[in-house]
Amino acid sequence: MAGAKTPRAKALAEQMERERAERARRRQFGIVGGLVALVVVIVVAMIVVRATRHHNPAAASAASTAIAGQVSSVPTGILDKAGSGGASAPMPISGQQALTSNGKPELLYVGAEWCPYCAAERWPLAVALSRFGKLTGLQQVRSAATDVYANTATLSFAKVSYTSKYLTFTPAEIQDVDRKPLTTLTAVQHNLFTTVGGGGFPFIDFGNRYRISTATYDPGLLKGLDQAQIAGSLAKSGNKVGTAIAGSANVITATICALTKDQPVSVCKSATIQTIERALGASG
Amino acid sequence: MPAGEPDADTTPAGPRWACYLGPLICVVGLGASIYLTVAHYDEHVSLSCPATASINCAKVTRSPQSVIAGVPVAVLGLPFFLGMLALYSPWAWRLRSQLPGYLRLAGVSTGMVFVLYLVYVELFKINAICLWCTSVHVLTFVLFVVTLLAQASPARGATTG
Image 1 (tube, rainbow over the protein chains, first blue to last red):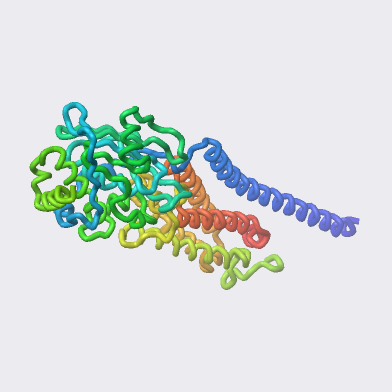
Image 2 (cartoon, rainbow over the protein chains, first blue to last red):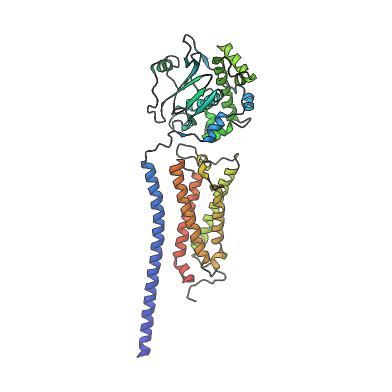
């Protein structure tokens, strides 16, 4: 009797063992599936939250300390070596009363964050302004993705402050990357922007004596670069991008020197600036 | 010894597909990590990656978050994939000990948690996605799935159970 039960008991035990193993296997795969699903859910949740925050990745954000520092401290040797860098000279303005503010010549900038030519021109303008005073509040932004020179990495002047003994800088980014209104021009600024500048971006009015109405160097040079790379190029002697920006900055610097009566001497009396300034006077 | 159990001395004890797929993922991940590491240390090497408003490798790899406790994140991929490659070696699979299996699980789980952190940083702190970093993240995720399945597979159970 006992011998007859043993095979059945053995078979039953094996059956139970198989079922137990199967349950264990299902439990293990259940755990695996649960862990994989957890990871997927976390990633999807992050993407959904990020997407629903309506944050425009192209919107301006504060420039890093490193970038602001590189822009404001381009080595004099590199600036002098760059000369004009082939940058186009500003156009003279005639028939307008000198533009001043707080007893100092005024530099009016009108641009838009989406504008690719503004994107290029802000770099040398920031470098030049930093030679006459302290420029703070720079932001990082990219030009429009749907325009020429799409997504050009640049700095925004929308929130900058500028202190200088020699000139007043009045920046106005009037539209953001999405072409939504950002800063409203005063009646005087609007009049200068439309009559002197022709309503195009960028418009840089140097005390109503000179104007820049486009990028003074090729914006295409900045293609594929981010702000850190562009700012880093400013300290590299012989770098194509750095030389173009430094040359343009020298032209802007010389134009400002023409307004400040060559003050400060440490900036305006350099041979490079003097050479450009003389050419400016000749053309003006 | 149950029928079908692999020879512990000569035959890898893990599922065959995992023994091939795991090392392959590790080697590809190692290659991507080497590329990211070189690009991190050599400023003349720029990552082949589009620069748009939302995709920008340089913005991610040169962000303040790209270094943790003085160690570049790009470099961390090297020990991770090298370690996982060792744990996925035939030698590790042949060991009778369950330790390599546990180490594989611990390693890939740590890697997966770190990847989730990096994805969070890209999406919410840097506001840009690095395609090369994402490729490493995807490889880590696939390795995570492979490791879990290998650990739970019947072939693995045959040797450990």
